[in-house]
Image (cartoon, rainbow, N blue to C red; front, side, top):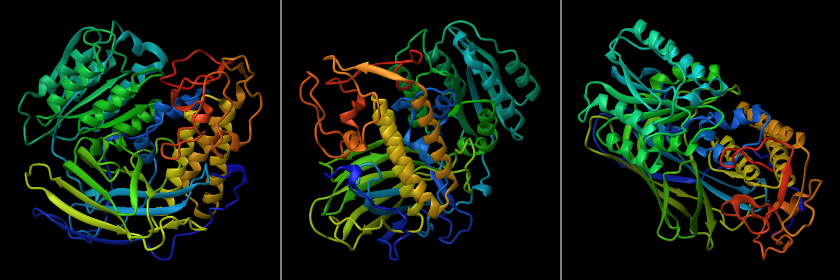
Length: 570
């Protein structure tokens, strides 16, 4: 691989004049809207709906760790104009292809992009009456950094936006569980309970969540939308604190038809647990970084996250004869199969995406979910990139609707075009969004601040160049995040040594020494180290990414000691 610093290429091209070929067929139960139904939009796969945690860490002048940057949340903060949903069903699979160069390494980059679009106009959704259980953590840890006050703002907003016929029960817990009210339509009573929430005691997440599910019973009503909304900082300290046990308990109730949406708050919480509960619970995860976010979630998102539009969604992908499936980003539910030739995504429920226009403001959630899969060419041109099958059932139905789509590419898959090949106009913003995510993720995975700085500078350079010709407000907002990240990195003087006593670099190295030329870094007495960047995972292994132990620099930073699982400490 050539040195990244020696590569000079400009990503100024528009979309390719001819897209990748698409062929498909579909079939299933009746009741589908017409293929040309107006007002359709994107679809959310559930899970994280924002990167509010990542943004809040940057706003505090701190350094985010890799677990705070969720791919699904990042993509949901971008509005991507949906491709025409022309399959004739409620949901349509719309694959795309980009072929160009990786913004960081300059290496050949071919990416299969999978999105699901709907012919359903989100503005026309008429949701069923709610039978909603709100489970609120008011433990002592919720007193920190205004966590409980953010929750209270959100709940007051939610109560004010309930519709006629909606019923709400409220469970409050610390190390004890109290059913504050059974199902009621009395808004004044609910407001009073929320006002009286006071931080105290430990945090028994298992018991609190279990009590919330119990209120909906073993056979939830089919005439209402049955959902638990769980609000917490996610720090289990009492009762059964095992994340595995908590997830298993929740999955048992979800299997009976109860949805689960989680809302996280605070500077420190178990983000894996909160996201995992939502992913397995046919629901969404939101982070309340401030009171404004609390208001946005319970106004702009409430009608969308409480009612799925399709259930038991499965996407099966088979690589064409000349390709292998590489890393996928966009959902932790993706499972690779059969020696990189097949992969599958099983999603409990999908939701209509709430955003219908581009916006660069805070709280950009609601744009819709996407999957990006790196495609590795293995032979000469065969024409076929991938075969994809979508299947799902509509709420209340047992029959499954099925759609098959084939994606073709006429050019040699081993050749890198001088300008990026984009299979459709929609791929322009998706290609940029994907590369911005890879750059930000690589920075969070680097323990070496010098490398992180160089990674972000390269990402910013390419992103700015692209945006100069494409004018994407969401990409502009991403660039603001990059600038804030760079400012936080450069604000903290960092000194230190490697384990063998060798001085760590005091000035940013050339990017090539971080991520490009394939030459292993110095041994530093810790044994051989791998290639600086893994082209499949984008782990910046030469900069001690991914938590590898061999040859890591031991660095002392002039910042507060903070857990590595939440944000990066140098």
